[in-house]
Amino acid sequence: MLKSLYILDENGILLYSKEFIKEQQYDDNILIGFFTSITNFSREALGTAVKNVDLGENNKLILAPIEDEGLLGAAIVSSNDNNELVTKIIRNIMQEFIDAYSPDYDQEKIIIEEMEKVVQDVLRTKTIHSPIIRIMISWLINTPFTILLVFASINLTLFIYMAFDLTQYITTEELFSKFFPALILLSTGNIILLFLIPNLVFGFLSPSRNVAIVNSIVHLVVTIILFAYSSEPAFGYIILGHLPLTLIFSLFFLVIGMRSSSKRLLKK
Image 1 (cartoon, one colour):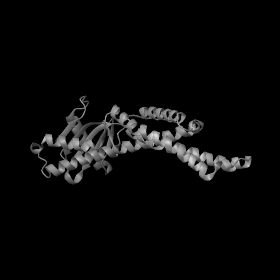
Image 2 (image 1 turned 45 degrees about the vertical axis):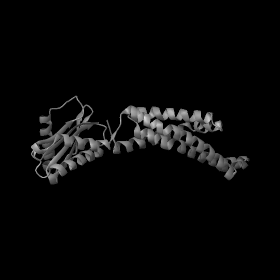
Image 3 (image 1 turned 135 degrees about the horizontal axis):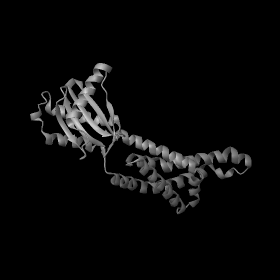
Image 4 (image 1 turned 180 degrees about the vertical axis):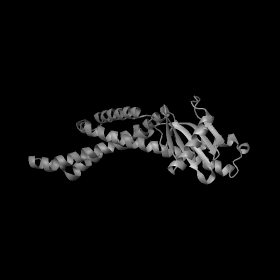
């Protein structure tokens, strides 16, 4: 969550700022001095600019200096926000600011309404909607998709059984050497087919880890129910018989979706 945004010149003069939440926890004058002090000290003492600072209470500071223009961008965000994403957002806003007001950066010429529009335009493509909307969108995508995947899983499995005539392996040796390995591969393939994309979607659009896990479990139950009422209800036992593997794959795909989301979208 983006909480505060600041653009300063190299002398520590505030050129533009915006508060995104009403609960102001920090004094702007103190913050501005803090920003410039950190930047100057890190350059002189460490030879490089500090890019983020933990402020405590689920807050952190992201700094994005543009040395060629003598500008410093700063933002206070939630501790779990992706640093690279926030830095990219700050730099996109600052580039629009540079294009509009370079090279003088005169405070009197800065039009707040225009900057407000710039900020909103940048955030529109980098911000996920409200939690309820995200949950609704994820289910609107996954509900018809899950029905299609169950249908595809049944028909693809039956096709493979027929194409390779797997029912021919009836001796004990053939069961263990050919049928069981093929059955394991089919079961693993079914689990990946059924749970890869839905869990990626849940992870990507989830407002939190707990909500993502709940959605994934509900999706698992719904999938089993769909199999129970399908033309091949016995296929539901494939999932039940490989439940630990199913849960592992589901969690793995959820994590990939959540990490992908954190790198591309900022949550409100």
